Length: 395
Image 1 (cartoon, rainbow, N blue to C red):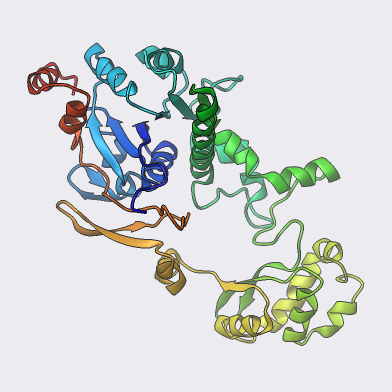
Image 2 (image 1 turned 180 degrees about the vertical axis):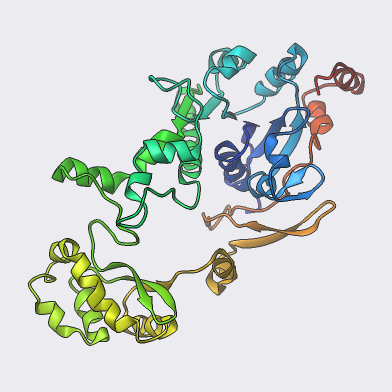
């Protein structure tokens, strides 16, 4: 099949920066017709650090492929009127304004769902549409801190640390995709769309499943453990003579095999390390015993030995090394395409592999307003009407 899984689904992308654009890009990868609406001056991400050309930045390219670009001034009634006409043709609308902004602009769920009762309207915000913090602005850093993620991340004796990737931004995007697909499935039965409401804050909480479990069932507040695992050991990074590598050898089969590999068979009979619970409890004593051996040889030596023994292990890559790895290449996680004025540019592939309707990189991120005329023409606007809207500053 040459069509995408979401072929025929039209998505209005009213989002900026990370969570919303990433959500809509994933839908576009799967074949949805994503129409990105930007203010006339373009969204702020176009001017972010890493500008790679006039009006376009690396971060903008990263999360806006497979979209058509339209500019609208939604502070003007003429611009809102164009959006309403577009909503009549849409299946999904995604917005990530601060809570309350869409109501002030007259493009909230209540109004647009009256125009198109089948519309699935997804709001991604810092804290959600309800609750005492609903009106607060939200950023990944704030959500990581308030959800407990930062308190459980970092070196054991160090300060709280933010996860290196914007995990609550990306998590909210993924939960939004799940919510949108569920709402589209429900619409097949009910004939009506609905509001999908998710947030960065809730993404952080939802991704802390094991940390909350530890607290609820033991009463202990999860602490920072560096690379170690709070429920398994050994399951962490260890030092080699030339760097670090990771090992997961926690269960009853892998633990003895790891001890044999290291020449530390007596540890399997040591009362401090017999069960997983014992090893977790006494991890600080176990770690130096293991590293006294692993620091004698380079990383590649231990990775080869672990591979031979069937023990899960891996290198700690830099971003450059991760992208260059043969497995990432074979799984099409690094792709290239032509972008006007820039030549060949790279893009991350889609991590979901569908056998019959695979994700495809059909087009790069839109230039500002690139498809405004085309989309308005599809809505029935004539050339004179489009020219009038341009003269009014609505598009």
